[in-house]
Amino acid sequence: SQTIHQWPATLVQPVGSPLSLECTVEGTSNPNLYWYRQAAGRGLQLLFYSVGIGQISSEVPQNLSASRPQDRQFILSSKKLLLSDSGFYLCAWTRPGGAAYNEQFFGPGTRLTVL
Amino acid sequence: GENVEQHPSTLSVQEGDSAVIKCTYSDSASNYFPWYKQELGKGPQLIIDIRSNVGEKKDQRIAVTLNKTAKHFSLHITETQPEDSAVYFCAASGGSYIPTFGRGTSLIVHP
Image (cartoon, rainbow over all chains, first blue to last red; front, side, top):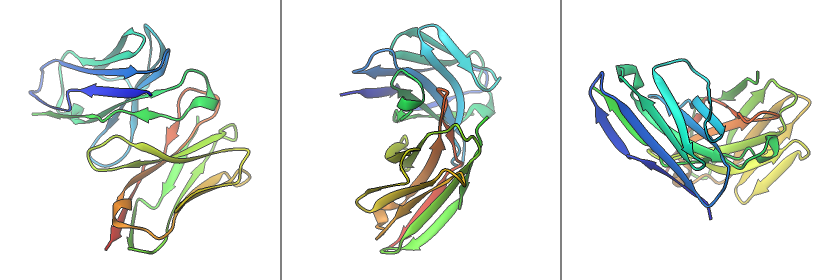
């Protein structure tokens, strides 16, 4: 069976510090990978998605970046955090392919607080 | 691009009542419509989905209906229980890798 992991679960960081959040998927190959942010409230804001190693698409211009160094690893980074980066970060994956395989499987999330 | 509207933003019901959440979408090419449930502090989990070749789907107390002509779909929960309390998201997707989510409905079931 497939599982998705995110760490850390909780993070408190000062403004201006760097960030690295990691997501890994087990039990599947060549997944599509996604990073979402959920600010106070409920909406899911898509930040990045990837359809393959080294292929990253950005949905929202900001001080965050993403990388996919391995097939099932997705990393969200920042060089300098802003207060507005606080939120609940969710990683998700879907099976490779197009519209017929768009069920998303979400990770447990990382709660980031920037002080 | 696709635009998904979800209503209501908050829904409060008594235990045992039914709850209905409605979504509309704009892209006629969308053909997959999932519903996710997000409990506090956790990631969303798929609870039911429907594809465009089906008008209705039911799974125990949960059902989803789809009207492709009107471009709307709805989630129906019958005999609500306190454990149904959560945030529910609808989504629509078609020919791209990117699903479009509604803004979510906070369902509160009072015992």
